[in-house]
Amino acid sequence: MADRVPMTVAGEARLRQELNRLKSEDRPRVIAAIADAREHGDLKENAEYHAAREQQSFIEGRIQEIEGKLSAAQVIDVTTIQNTGKVIFGTTVHLVNVETEEEVTYKIVGEDEADIKEGKISIGSPIARALVGREAGDVATVQLPSGTAEYEIDKVEHI
Image (cartoon, rainbow, N blue to C red; front, side):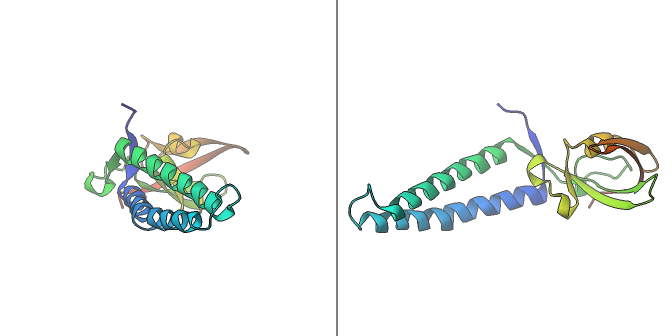
């Protein structure tokens, strides 16, 4: 069995929602499109048929991918874990750049959930790796593409 992959409650819900949409809406729609294209005769030169088959292949592949991710997921609800001030998977961390005093907030999430625009960073990212296990008041040195940066952990939230 593959290793368990950490995932937040919201991340699991989003994957289940996508899986449900693929199975209940996208799959039936593409099956109907294939049946419709078949009725137009010669399949060798039927672009609609080939496009629909390609889309069907993509949908089936994505369904398998999501089902695999969900079966390997270890869903962690950080709101049920006592806040000790330590940075762990799922926590929201408020940081202050020691040099520039710029404040940033990140939520540490699973690989598939990471979205820097939403302030969600992967547990495997350099910033998250530098923060996990530390606590409010600590200073973490983070290796960035542009060099190193030091961040003071201002606050750790379980939200």
